[in-house]
Length: 248
Length: 53
Image 1 (cartoon, chains in turn cyan, orange):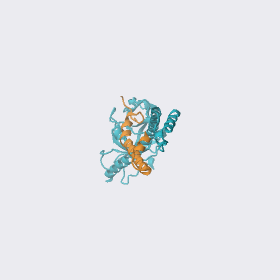
Image 2 (cartoon, rainbow over the protein chains, first blue to last red):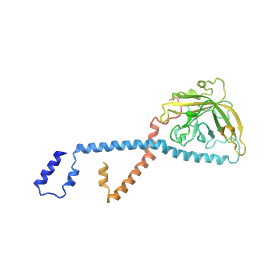
Image 3 (cartoon, one colour):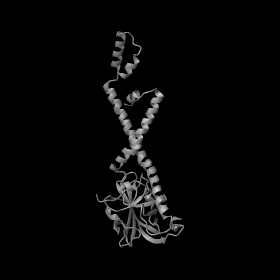
Image 4 (cartoon, chains in turn purple, yellow):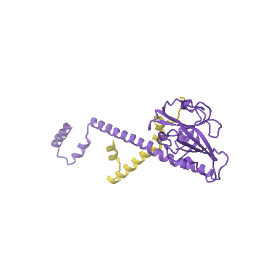
């Protein structure tokens, strides 16, 4: 820098004093200085983009997903408005209520593709294991939903304790499950947790189980968090859709 | 880099500031609408299912 300034000054002395001397001097930056400054600006830009990505995943996806989930839930409710009826699965089979998670109802749809789950709903497994449905005589009703972002419907899954209720609402029935086991961390390859008789939960006999899966720890998905429940009773939906005692 | 963009924007300082703001919003829009949704599945933050693969 000092050399450049001296050169400039010498030039200025040699020629007639130029009035616009400061302007060209500012632009005359060495190539190294330019490279360093561009590199620095790129680093700042990268930092801002990463920050924006955090905003996107933890806030914006929730906004979009909640809006979409609300719209889809509304549609199902509209179709159900005629009162209890036969099992209706179009656009969502029913709603999941988990008082321990305290976030209202979660629409349940078939499949666990990220495209489907990104709408802020819970999905029941079709692969790798075909999940049973609540109305099946026995089997495991296995669900997945997002822990963070995209509605984060299972965000508070760690608040579910043994003995808590999980209520599934179909068009004509309330299925009340009771949580009997949780697995705070397991491998993502552990498909056995979805078995019709989930042995890892301590279950030995065929029955009507429910399994909730999501990722853990929060904000990453290194492991999976699993909650198991067993069907306790079924209530018929009345005309006012009075919720069972667990939800009041 | 940003200095170069600033110098090449037309108009006085206010017009340039306004255009810069519009450009910033355009970039954020493209990121939120296209880049992040594309990048998200490639990152290991949000896989919630168990599977055999």
